[in-house]
Length: 122
Image (cartoon, rainbow, N blue to C red; front, top):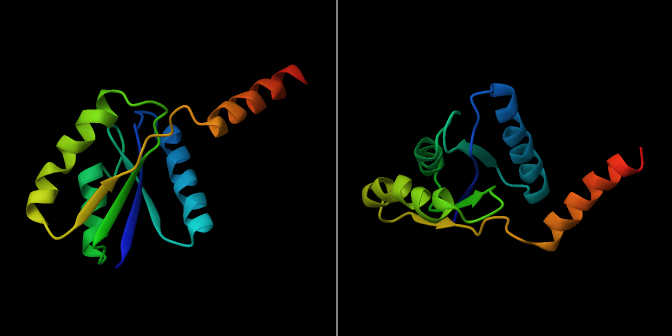
């Protein structure tokens, strides 16, 4: 079964800021050896429904949406599901899975420590 992967970020009015999500999607593509595309909740293209449709049209029967959000706020817990509701109705044969947000994982804490140490050690 072909699986499509989407990295979902918030998006920014500053297009340069949105480029960071594109870079992360490229890195994840390389690591997983599978095409990963970015999508934006707001202020960027493609939006989530467009990215899902793109994956469906490319033959994906299962789509994993990875929200690159630290915590489970309103957008992650509610709005994502509202955005994909119509697509699930249009394509009931497509399995759409929303992965867990980044959360309070030790990897996040270690990354925060690394950034802090970069400053302390300079």
